[in-house]
Every structure is written in structure tokens, then in C-alpha cells.
Length: 321
Image (cartoon, rainbow, N blue to C red; front, side, top):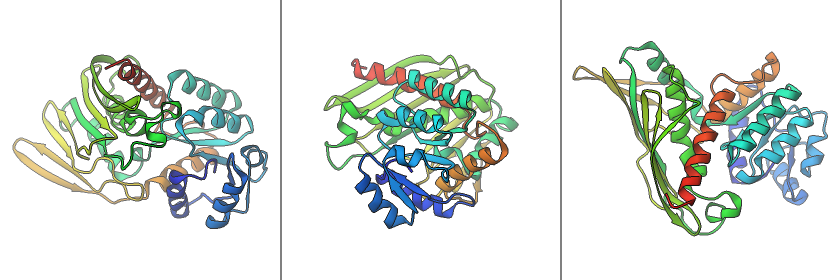
């Protein structure tokens, strides 16, 4: 584990619930912090980032540091022969994402962007409904992710650390739209931007919205770190719609319910839940064991497509919307 911060603490909980993952070592820019985290969570070793990457008993690393350090650490890990599970977003820029994926391809090590929402029965069922065509073709997704931060200080409001709503939580509705468009067979490599709106707070995007087209699917998405936004989403098809009451789930549980509406009838689909961080860790473990570079729930094409939208959306936001 690289980066003993808050998200890493949540990831350790997921790792304990995983079928294959074991926390072996903790790396940090502060070896003392790494040692404390390792002792707290039962890791055998700790040290600097390079100390961890040099270890023969480490097969994969989880990058849980601030956005702006992801690319450097992920590339160093890949070059050291480790598989990489990189916390979302993979990087603030498409250019860095391309570099990471190119290194992963060259050194033949798996790379997975850690979008927990891509894993479990909820995500699988959503993709199956889109591919199955029982509601016709998806035409519009409406989704947002936003919360009111307790303070206007720290990483979220620091431009130098990639602060702002788009990268922190706006990436989730973007990744959802990419997933739905790909499942429907739409082109995810050429998004059509139909409108960006943003409000800057302390030099970062405090709130932002976008209307984006992926072929025949449009996505109306929003995000905020200064306002609470509904955690539900709607996917409108030619012959019905899906209501997703708790589309993002939590760091410990995938969403449990999908509501299908068609011809005036409503069907509530109750789904088993999983520990989503455990699921993403196991997906990377299986990729290592099976000699694959990619994970089907979040393939590199989707990481690249999401990074393209996030880069362009954030650039527009910081330029004034």
C-alpha cells in the first residue's frame, strides 16, 4: 500500500474481506507514518515508497495518495514489476493516464483504476440490462455525486493537489456514463460536449455540471464539494427507464436495488451486495493469476475515456465554465 491516508484505511477494510489479498507492506513519503499504519493494520513491513517497491514479497500495490501523485507512483510501481490498483481518478490529465497505460503495456503488468462502483451484482446487472435490450436502447443518463465538505481547507480545496469536485466525485457519474455507453455499443472515444457549467471556490471547481454525448446516449451529470446532491440516478431508454436509488453505494457495500419501469409497471430488483473494495482487489489478483493486463469491469479503454472527459470538463471549469 502506497499512501497511509484516509482512503487507504477504508481499502484495508475491503482487503480483509477479499478472497485473495493480504496487506504485506506500507509505503509513505514519511516512513514513520508508514510504520504506524503497518503496525495498526498488521502489515509485515513498512518504509519509503522505494522500500516497498523493492520488495520481492509484494505482488501488487494500491496507490491511495493524492491525485497529482498517482502517475509517478503507479509508473514507478509498474517499472518495479508490480501490478497496480490505482485509486480513482487515475490522474488529473489524459496525458498522464496514457503514460501509465503505455508503461503497463510495455512491462506487461496489470493496471486497474479503482472505481469501486464497477464491481458487484449491481454493476453487472446494470450492464446486462443495457446489453440485453429489454428496455430498448439507452438514450439518457442523469446522475450526480456531491456533498458539502465540512471545511474549505485541505486537499479538496487545494489547486496544487488536484482539488475540486470533478476529480474527487464527479468522476463517478462520468465513469457510469462511459460504462453504459460502452455496454450499448456507443463510441466512448469521441465525446460530444454540449455544455459545461462550473462555480469556482477557492480556486477549484466547487460545483460543476456537464451535458455530454456518447453516440446516441447523452449524459447529464453534476458534482459538488460544497452542496449535497441526490445519490440517485435515472437511465432513460427508448422503452422504459431504470431508477437507481443508491447508485454509488458506499465504501463497504455495493448498491442493493434497481427499479425497472416499463409500460406503466414497476419492478424492484433486489440484488446481493458485496464489499466493493474487496471486489476490486480480487479482480486485480485474478488478473495477475491469469496473466491478464486488464480487468473487464474497468478496462483500459474506459479509464482512457473517463480521463478524456475529466480532463476536458475540468479545463472548462477552471477556465470559467
